[in-house]
Length: 114
Length: 113
Image 1 (spheres, chains in turn blue, orange):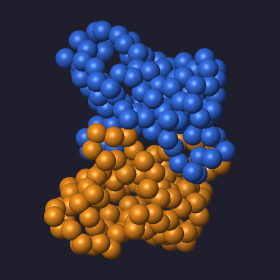
Image 2 (tube, chains in turn orange, blue; image 1 turned 180 degrees about the horizontal axis):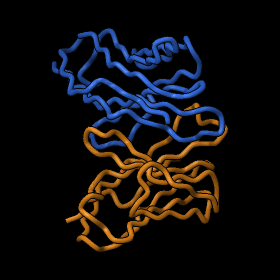
Image 3 (cartoon, chains in turn purple, orange; image 1 turned 90 degrees about the vertical axis):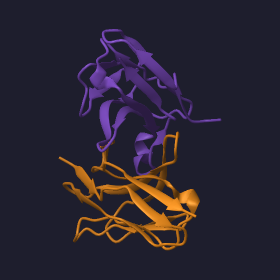
Image 4 (cartoon, chains in turn blue, yellow; image 1 turned 90 degrees about the horizontal axis):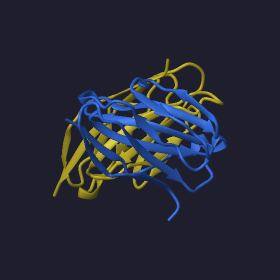
């Protein structure tokens, strides 16, 4: 089925470890973004991209890196995991011309840093 | 910058009760407004939207009207069901060429049979 695929669904990391959260979409969406969801704080934008080779920072970018080498993929890298990065991470995408039609979200990655 | 404030939850209702979730926003220009719903264990899904003042978005019995004079986009449903139990997020996008969505904190709604 078409949509946004996130892997893994669950992950436990030790403090200081690094990892990459994967996000792939097959809808040819130009715009892709990463959000983190924390209780009482809604969704906060980490990084976003409007096309291959173009990325920019969102509201809470520290401790995270992204790259966009293809239209389909937008991985999120945690460089040195910290307990404060325990959260649920969502990837979302849309056509640039159809932003008002809403985003398509992945099902999320639940990350615990111990 | 843009921001969204929505009523805090959790909200617990009985089946067939009336549901209102308040949402107000701060933005420059003419944002588009959205309600997203997140069912347990899932990602967010677009519930409804409105792209200009006085527009009414509706879907699955839910409605919300874009009120520019009060900068509000309150979500309502006349008769809720157990299946409406979810977290509801109000969101806004900025003007043209601003693709980012700003989300409220979310309101957890539980409907009891």
